[in-house]
Image (cartoon, rainbow, N blue to C red):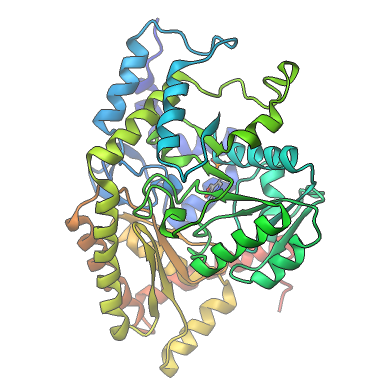
Length: 470
Ligand SMILES: Cc1ncc(COP(=O)(O)O)c(C=O)c1O
């Protein structure tokens, strides 16, 4: 009897959290329950999700930037359907898959000049691992340089380039050869590169954690330093690529910036099938695959699968056909105007950092005495709490999924699908206004919820021994 997938989904509805808790990750379920993300989703379409009560939600979390084209995009589904219905075999192994070759050609067309060769994998972290190995092979050097607050994935190589100690804790030793420098600080980058043993400088043009935008001067200066000292520039566009910032790559906002390696993943296959791509110059690639004996010396069993390649080809078409980069710029500007217009009216609201539809809303210490006391109270309980005070009511009261931008930062991040419309932006702006009005009433119900959350956080910290009683 064929397996009844819809039957499984229906039968487990409501019990999925217990099942997940028992067999997968109980701590994560605790987090979901604490933050109110323990909802039963029944449907997803475009930028929307529906729960079992029929309530419609706006998804600005998009699984951390995967759904640039929304859910169930008809063109991407159609491409996948064609693969499923076709007899054409994938993963023969000893083969040169035509969909992969075509996708590589299409990606190269969208790259800065000179990047003409593609390695395909299955995730962002694998795209970075390939970049590290390629840079070591090409330069014959061991070291990498990464930025504070960097996030490049969580396998051992990319974890070694993580700029946040809490991710690395418990997993030492890292790759011994990566050093951290501060974003926009050319002097420290120069000092590291001058040692002459650095294979790669790995960076995100806009950091996912905190939406910190690298300045043009920094990136061009870093490029000069990398060229001077023979280091490859590896640009992680896993989150910023595929039109997210209003250009195909975020690096393409900077004239004459020509990284040696670009990493893509997330939205590349439209949210259906995992995929990763590491795109570089022929000479770099050839330094890895240098003899017939080593023709597949770096590879992955599931790389270049027909489903992933077809979904990615369809995603590229959707990006062009629907003018989504232009739309990202227009809609991003609408977010910016709306948020900036609110800043003078709300003491907690400090500003917006935005490029296309990669958006951070920043909060900070207010001026008035009573709100300052409230700010101090929540930050003392937990430095992550204030951003949760925004994310929670956005979800509970306004049915919008968002995320805290990173560890211990009063910033929330929005990564909406690129094909939302003006009414979706206005839905968010009205919601943010309401959340702000409520948080500026202290004492008030919004602060009671926060206190409750804060006491959960304190208890957890005490249990982990991160805070001593008293
Ligand atoms: C900039 C960046 N690089 C790499 C990764 C890792 O991607 P993955 O989770 O697919 O391994 C992420 C994931 O969030 C990311 O944001």
